[in-house]
Image (cartoon, rainbow over all chains, first blue to last red; front, top):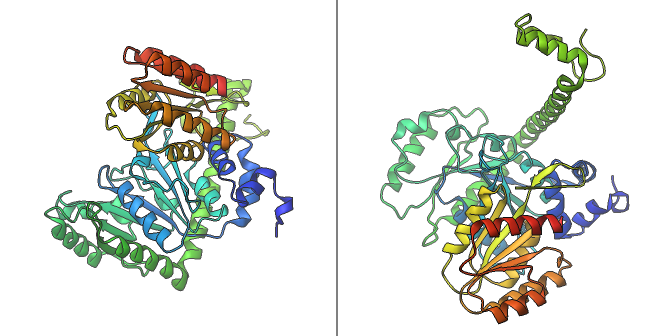
Length: 321
Length: 141
């Protein structure tokens, strides 16, 4: 067990509720700064596996507005909440307009809420490379629930699967006929379907299509996705939405699938970290190691094919001959 | 646009754009946000009707390098110094603040004395705003 005194000072500050230290640590993670690693290592044992609720769905369906209301709902019940809201980076300038904060109301003096906008910085799949570790810091910092709002999703933006314990997919009426719900991708990752904007015509139809989908689906995990209707203009359904999320979290515990899910996500994370490191090392070697540069020359000259060259490549000090 | 950190790695500049007070004219703030985005910055757009407390809180949570305030209501002499005071109170006075809007010369002078690093009136070009923002962010880094 790590005592508070043995923690690095930044980690200690984060645990003690220093919001600025927390904000800066998230920046370090985003920037791939080497000083993030000791903080993350020190705080990992302090994570409590709080619910990490992913909110995904196409752009404009009301994810940010729903989150604002969900945060209010939880604060009224005394639970502390952190939000990481991801928006896309421009593939052209690298810049970004992070606009999810607009929907986030007031609460300037409430220490029980923390909101962070995050640019995707070129990562595909709807979240940023730093999202998972940022969510983990927020867990270690003591927030009871962490929400992750993804980039407005396309059909295959399912990276939230590797981060969230409960995935909410938000839809609105008239996104297409029921065949859309059969397609692979986004519809497959939902633990909770939220049909937002029930004040618009067609909402019941959309909920019926989803009910048909859920009735068809294989329930390998034993969980049947819940379907909830909400509106954010004249707020309704928000407590139903939270109850559905909460029911899934309870299911994870009673069924024992939380442990399995966590094990799978951590395995994916470790593989990802190694893949990143090996990739960096190899890229570096291809540029600087004379042997590997010759190997690359051979491929460029068509004396060797890329697959054979890849088989000969090994990262680290032991190099190909 | 990026800045260079201690590890000499280029990382995006993070800037908060907010409108303190009650005026509803956010066209200018949006145009500036867009220009900063196109210059490669990560712009946290906090939007309309922000209190100084909300603005400072957002700046700290978002860990921004720079704060841009747009104000057309005439309340700049009340709201902008309040943002500066709150930043100081939170030991964050090192975050540069720039402002844009309808701000008379005399007020602009006083705001500069109070610590506002740059002020842009109706005639300012986007190039001017972007290059000043870049300079300010670099000076703070």
